[in-house]
Picture (cartoon, rainbow over the protein chains, first blue to last red):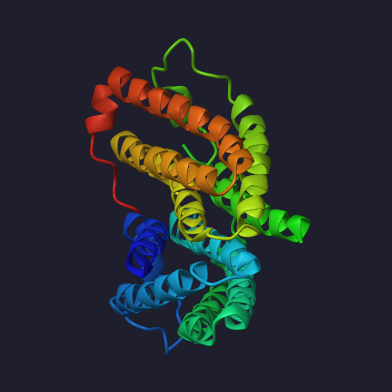
Length: 160
Length: 160
């Protein structure tokens, strides 16, 4: 039963993560000013794959535990927000709105971590790398905003 | 406790549904050939808001029930897929890939409905309108594909 649940949660992660492949960093992103500590492009899919495995294991452990209501609801919330950032940032090229999504994601991941931990300590710990990574992603998005004020403030063309 | 859970699930729904506001139907969609029974644009947000309320109530009921593991994992999967269709169809303008996402969404919604029903009959019934609506959306996407073969087959320009 653990592996069935792990598989379902992993599918949810890859559904959210599919946006990374569909909206890849293109010339627009390459031309932005970025901080010196920006990780190279290949780091992102590798990190996310690792995080997805941890997140799915945490989800499966807590799904099988009693009194999992808040943790399960929050797990759903964080995965819905997880899939939102890439279309906003790389799809719409909206740096400020991306920052807003990342703050919401960070809050949901932190809340999920706390809720998981109350049900199962290991599940909570499995979310720690995720929270660290979203913190780094948030710092990166904030730096990109600071270093590209004009681009961040320019209204994006309407969808055609 | 029900209302806290309802609120968290509703936030997850609106995170997925935010893509509808971010990638609105533009000139590209208006110029596509559509079947005569295509609902007017305003029907979509109204229907989705109603469905989100039902989905959140179903999620909250089952989160509070024992033996909810599979149902909770599937609830997460369907919400992750729910937020994927709009960026693919309206954002990337990829009609065939949109159809693929809708089939995956339909399967996940059907599986969630069955899993919810085994835990709580009312929760399962609350997912029935959702499955019907995703069936209609799938028929619409399929019709748009059939009526716009050339557009569906044309490679989309790479992201800039």
